[in-house]
Structures are given as structure tokens and as C-alpha cells.
Length: 499
Ligand code: F6P
Image (cartoon, rainbow, N blue to C red):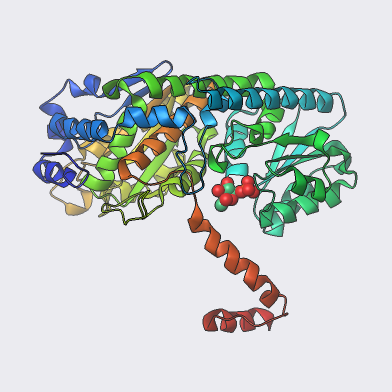
């Protein structure tokens, strides 16, 4: 019989009466066999609620879906975003995973842009600018914000600040602490048509007073020029890079400013290592494939409605925010590539936060709530701060939580009973460096793409976000009192706002 995602139900039902403790006790080798390594990145899937037979079914599904061929097509520059007629070649920003003419041409453009980034940074470093304000939103913000927050050090040449929200409080808070004479601005927008970014960009342009310190990153050179930023301070972007996959492009300019161009290149090298692994490692040794299969198992086998991501490293506290866009904007789809309805559930809600703080907020629900929430725990083995006792405590808590969630603890008192059986994946990095962070992010990118192949959906469009933007544009004149809203409820609320 052909294995399909719907057939995962049968495996889940077969395993429903078997505890996770039992799965591990009866097959202790899974602690090693369900673990993989790609250089400094280690992944352990032994605490997922599948057994070897269910995993076998998952790998058969992977073969039938031709995940290996799909990776080849994506990294080879095929039109994997058919609704917009585009490739998704973020891998070409960081290496030459394949050698098609399209990839090589994209790679040449990427490297020329990197050279320009280096030159612009060197020129800016020769001035007395100390601070950078980066303006962008979504994919033009979350990646740079994550990497800068994770890796920037106090002795960096530039301090980098971010403004994304159209809420004027965001701009006010950031600009309040800065001197316009010692600040440069970078306006990042693939389209250069995003309302939030244009409004915030205007605020920064006016606040700087002198727009010789204003830079842009965009695919749309004309709109950038109309905004008042000349070509010599504009870095390119291309249609073949999706916004949420773009931190490796000139969208990463704030990263390169904060960490230096050499570190930015190490970030790219780490991602390139995962590109090579995802493309060439056999399915059963492929971390991206295991991660994607685990995601569909938890969604389509166990019907988990949400997925938590729990970095046990303060420097990765923005990872859940970043992944929310990467995963949910990519996989939040309800029709297949051919336009027909998908027959299984697609993306769950992704959420999370850094441990150990979150243990004291939402972990109660993870341990004893009625919903089982699969979780990705992420840890870093070696750190370079001097507080060894804290790091030991952090890792002890990380291991304790994965164990306690999986194994539970029985008590005759139902209030003190822990059911266990709560699945998790453990991802460990040897250390947090530009290279390993690049690997971690690229791993999620590939997992997302492979999940999209398994669900037969487009991971690279995002039409779902357009309707709200259109309605907001229609309502702006209504909010300014120039016309009435069409919708009766909005009309009533507008009256409250105006009075
Ligand atoms: O939120 C929708 C979206 O189109 C994202 O996909 C994108 O990352 C973001 O807006 C910003 O778009 P742009 O870079 O064009 O300003």
C-alpha cells in the first residue's frame, strides 16, 4: 500500500497506547540511531513519538514525494514558486550548491553585491558615524534583527538599531537615544512599496537632516531614487530571493555593519554547509529531511495544533519571532500547487521563547495542559562568558525539561501527576558563532521547503498578507475623515475613534 500523509493516522493510532518512555525503553538504541550530526550541529529526534515502523513510513513518503529531487530543483534554480513564476535561490547567496547557468549568474550578482557592501562599510567606518538605524519589516527586518541581537558585541564598530512597526512609538524610542550627526540610516525593502517602511524611512530621512548618510536595499531602484537615495548608496536585491529568505543578501547589510563583513561571510559559509548537506546527504542521514518529516508526523499523525521553539540561549531569544515568519508565511497555505484544496492539515502555529525564562511562564501548560505541544529545544554546548555555574544550570534545565516532558511522573494525586509523552527534538550547537547560526537558520529554511513539498504547497508566495494591506489602504482616508467606511462594524468603531 502506498504511504500517504493521511496513512500516518494508522501509525499514530497503533502507537497511541504506547508511552514515549516505553518506545525508548524497548528500543534504547534509538537514542543514538535517531541522532544525526552535521559538523558542529547535532540533532536528536529520539524523543519524538514515532517508532521505527512509523519512521519507515515517513521515509517512504519522502521517497515518493522525491524530496531529493525537490532539493535539486530548488537549489538548481527551477521555478519552485510557480504562482509568481520565480526561483527561490537564497542558496546562491552563500555558495554554489549546484552549477546551473542560472545559479552561477545569481552567484556572480550576489558576490558583486557583497563586494559593494564591504566597500560601503569601509567608507562608513572612516567617518565618525557610531550608530546605524535599520528600517524594514518582515523579511527585511527579522533576520538582521535576530543575527545582530545574537552576535553583536559591545565593542562593535557600529551599534545597530531597528525600526519596523508603523507605530510611531517604535521610531520615537529608537531615535530618542541617538545623535543624528553620528547616525546613518538604511531603508530595506524588497519592493520599496511597503507602507510601514516608507513611513518610517521618511521619519529617519527627516530626522537625519542630511541624507548623505541614508542607504537603501531594494529590487526597485526607481522607487529608491524617487525616495531620494542615489544609486551609489543603494544595494541590490533580486526577484529570485524571497523576503523571508533574504538575510543572506544585502538585506543583511545591518548584520555586516554590526559584526563586520568577515563575520557576515562566516554566516554565509555556515548556511552553505547546510545547503550541501541538505542536497547531498542520503534521506536517512539528512537533518533537514528528518526535521521536515518530524514536522509532518506531529501535524498529520499526532494532529498537534501548535509547535514550540525553545532556544536555551539568551542570544537566540528572537529566533521564535524569526521562525514565525519563515515557517508560517511559507507554509500557512490551504491549497496545493494546482489550486485544489489540501487534504491534510498544513502548518501549525509556531511560537516560543527562550529558556529558562519561559519555564516560569508557559511551561506549566506544556507539562500538564490538555494540548500536546511538540517542541524544538535548542542549546549551545560551549559559551565564552565567565559564568560557568550559570551555563551548567542552563544546560541542566534544558536537559531536564526534555526529559520531564517526555517521561512525566506519576502520582495518585491528579494535580501532581505529569502525563509525559510530550515530544521534542533537541538541536545542539557546539558554540554560537556566525557559522553555526547560519547553519541553524538554513536548516529551518530547508525543513520548511521540504514540508512544503510533502504538503504540495508553495513555500514562496504570501498572498494571504495582501488583503489586509489593501483594506488598510482603503481605510486610511476613512480614518482621516475623508470618507465613510463601507463595513458597518468598522463604521461604528471609527465613530468611537473620531469622537
Ligand atoms: O508581510 C508581507 C511581506 O511581503 C513579507 O513577505 C516581506 O518580508 C515584508 O512584507 C516586507 O516586504 P518588503 O521587503 O518589500 O518591504
